[in-house]
Image (cartoon, rainbow, N blue to C red; front, side):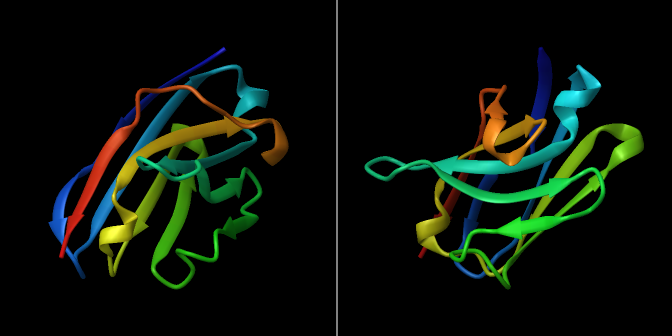
Length: 117
C-alpha cells in the first residue's frame, strides 16, 4: 500500500505556471515509477507524465514542451512543473505510483488545477 500527499494545485490564468508536489510513503518497490494523471469532466483520464527511479521520463503529447516532471528519490517525492498553462489543462491531477507504468495506481484525492482564459 502507498500513501501520498498531493499539493500545489490552484487557479491561474492562461499562460501561468503551477508546481505540483506529491510525497509518497509505503512499499518502496511500488514507488519505482511515479507520475501524474489528470481527470476533467467529460474527458478520459489522461496519464500526463511519468518518471522512473532511474530517471526515465515520458510525457503525454498534450503537455510536451510545457510540463516538466522530476523526482527526489531520497524524499520519495515527485514534482510536476507546469508552464504555459492552457484552459484545457483544467483538471484534477492525481499522483500515481507503481512498479511499472502499466501497474501504476492513483492513491490520493488529487489536487485541482483551474486555468482561466
